[in-house]
Amino acid sequence: MCMAVPSRVVAIDNGMATVEAFGATRTCSLMLLSESVEIGDYLILGVGGGFAQDIMPKETALAALSFMAEVLADGRA
Amino acid sequence: MEAKITVTARVAGGVFQNIAMTSTRLPDAARLFTGRPLAEVLNLIPAVFSLCGTAQRLCGLAAVENAAGLPPQARPRPLLAETLVEHGTALARDWPVLLGEAPDLKSLKALRAARHAPPPDLLADLLDTVPPRLLAHLDALGLAEFGQGPPRPEAGPFSRHQRHFVSNGLKNRFLARVVETRAAMVAFATAEDLEITIPAVTDGVGTASVEAARGTLTHSVRIEGGLVRDWRIAAPTDINFHPDGPLVHALSGQPAGDNPEHRVRLLVAAFDPCVACEIEVILDA
Image (cartoon, rainbow over all chains, first blue to last red; front, side, top):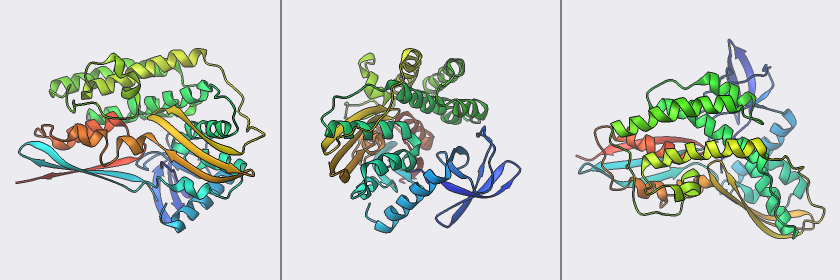
């Protein structure tokens, strides 16, 4: 299934964000977003992960991450 | 966690053969909806499957309505908007890269900013400028009929519009997306918004399909006492990128040419997977 992992912004530098999800960090561009992004926001990255394409409300993101953690723990999904 | 598909194609005697398809997608994740209250699951679906969140949400809701014995409802407008944004994204982001150009990030940003009502002018501009060059590129490489072969079950714009086409070659696959985008623009202009509510009585067994951007999406559900007992999702990418699916068969036996990786890349883009796709070409001596 095409799950997209909400990634938490941990740093922003010159239009690029460092984001974290499940202990892994990566860098993505914020240039496709119209809204301004702050540290602590949750982003949905587009295919390939180079660009953030959406900001997800925190409550929604936490619910999705909690479910995905169960999927990962389950292993056979 | 990031899902990815890998296509591994061998080239022997100048043709593609022994195509292997692997995926790190988690197609059975929906099984973990079991035991949760229905309302929670209907909220989780667009959050977890956010790449085509509208289609997933509407399909899940339609399956629940089916389980409750309610007639299917048309909810075309949000679905059409998502299809237009996804097809527009292919035109702005993916097709230029196939031509060796940079993605059109300006159009992509404008499209995403207006994703609930994709601007017709922007889509028309993309349709007028990008497909003609890609189609000419295919002609120049002699690839208009690349991948042509006996029809097999598949999902997506070509499958939905194949009555317009005499062959399932590469060029017609891309043309089908152009045709569909134009038709969806017309349909969106007159489509009505319908309110989305969860039906009061929900227990039962139900199944429903919607036409998502990349093809038919199906949800099958069983609900007891307001709790989800079973939930399965079949997505278009499951069909198109199956190890015995239409892409593998379209590629097998085709001439590899002097840039086999580009040929695979074009065919993959025509089928448009919902996740990143890595391509490996192994040249046999």
